[in-house]
Length: 143
Image (cartoon, rainbow, N blue to C red):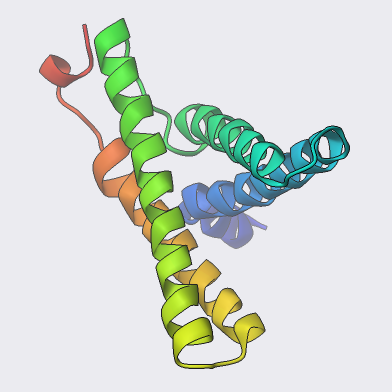
């Protein structure tokens, strides 16, 4: 039992990241599902679902996964802005990956999308860990 506890503690951050990633996907899908019937086009519900799910991801990653201690309006806006920017960049990378490998080169889009999602999850984790929620010194926390 002690070995399991140590293993869970060792991989706590990664496990929480994956759990909240699944919940973020659920928020995205649920938001889209609720909003889609009210619009003639898919653009608005998809955009709204993306915004809501990225906001959910930011709040949960900040609090539960990376335990960010950043305070102060400017520092919080910078952290949130960099989180949204990284997610927007990973969305563009996903689109480019799909366009190149599925549309242009003709690989099976289901396999390409799966590989692209793996890449996006890794990119988002690394961006969050090393850039957005990196452990900061006292001068960078907004205090």
